Structures are given as C-alpha cells and as structure tokens.
Length: 284
Image 1 (cartoon, one colour):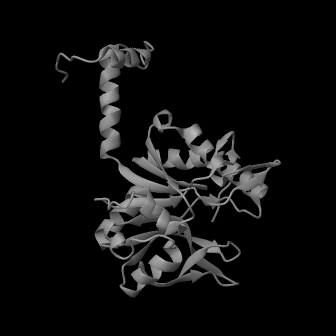
Image 2 (cartoon, helix red, strand yellow):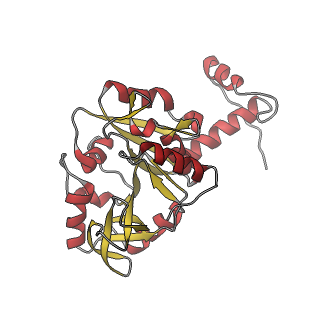
Image 3 (cartoon, rainbow, N blue to C red):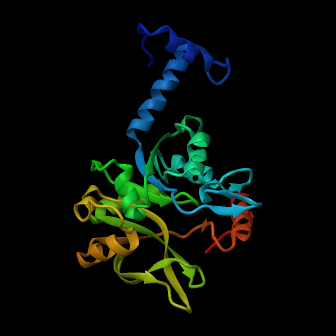
C-alpha cells in the first residue's frame, strides 16, 4: 500500500530527478524518487567486495593496459566481474589499484558505479603493497564490521556467492576460499590437503593429476586484520599459513564456470572467456 507524503527538496536535486523520467520505465516524479530511494537502500543493505586490480599492465594490439580492462565481447573484463557481483547482491565495491597514470582509465570508465547498479570507491597504492596490503589499504586502515568478499578483477565466473557467504558464517571461518577442480596445468595455488571443508595445506599444484585450485575469490571476516595490520604482505603466502596453523581457513566447492586472464596466453584467454560469456563453452 502506498501513502502520500510531501517533500521539500533542493531545485537542483529535482532537476536531476526529472532527468531520469522517460515516461515508460520511470513514469513520473514520484516514481523516480521512489526508484532512487529503493536503489539507495539496496546498496546500503548489500554486501561488500574488494576487487584486486593493481597488477602489472599487459600488452594487447600494441597497447599497454590494465589486465582488468582487456575487452571481452566489447566491454572490459572487470565489467563482467562487477555485473556478477551485482547479480549476487554484492553492490558495495572497492577497487584496489596502483597509483599509475594508466590505472586512472579504470576509474574514468567505471566512475562511481551508478551506471552498473553498484557503488564503487577506489583505493590507490603509492607503491605495491602485496595482495593483503591492498585489502588493508582499501579500507584505509579501518576494520570493517561485516564479512566481505575479496577477488581478482580479471576473472569470469557464475557463482552462488550467497551460499559461499552463508557457509563462511556457519563455519566461523576467518577466511573461506572458493575452490574449483582443475587440471594441474592451470597455474594456480591449491588446497593440497583438506579435512572435510577445512583446509590443512595450501600451496602449488603438482605436475600431474587434478587438484582443488583457488579461484582467487575469498570471503574474509573482520578478524582477519587481527593477524596483520601492515603492508607488503601476500594473502596466499603470509595470511593463509597463519590461518591454517589456527585451523581457521575453509574451502567452498565451486563447480564452475571459471576462467581468468592468463598473462602468457592473453588471446587464448579472451577467446575462451568470450565463448563462456556467449554460453558456447564451459571450463572445469
């Protein structure tokens, strides 16, 4: 049931509201204000993620560009990642970048995220801080109050992130890693020994057989910052060993699809991800 109310708004705000009215999807001023309030509430209630996008640039067609900006089906790789986060109600996003001139093209393209239905902030590193340092820097040294996702900005996936989040809460984990069955030819770190879904060993995949490879998508609880509050640290090589020693690292089994940009096979990666996006191929 709708109720009539009266509002007093700045004329500039009303002008911005009126520009959204198209007579079809947004019928009038009241409808426009209602939609804006709903969108704001949805973002405030949604989950958060840190997108790691500060790696070295790659060369494509004679140009150097951030890996997350490699075009897949006409749009940057990171746009596919952001839209998947939005589909999973993860709408508060911090993009972690190195403070290089060319990395500014990421912010210039995505801006505040409104065009994609999310809220995006940017955290720039004055110098490389390592993956865990990048997460710490993303929150400006402040400890968040709720669990949050951390993932690479150059990967394609279709994951039930809500189930991963719920498992993380239920187990009381400090960190949960999304794991996918993968051939050892894929250059990924892996859960090499497990007890149920608790990870007991984590490292490089072997030369033969299959393993449970990390997709580079994690859920962290705020207490993760109890272990480290300094920079120049790695998630996989500094944080995870600490958590394993305290039996606080868990795995979430993900069936796929999943694929990321391979620095050594960029064109092959673009072709495979494009096919997955088009629904013509899968990845194990």
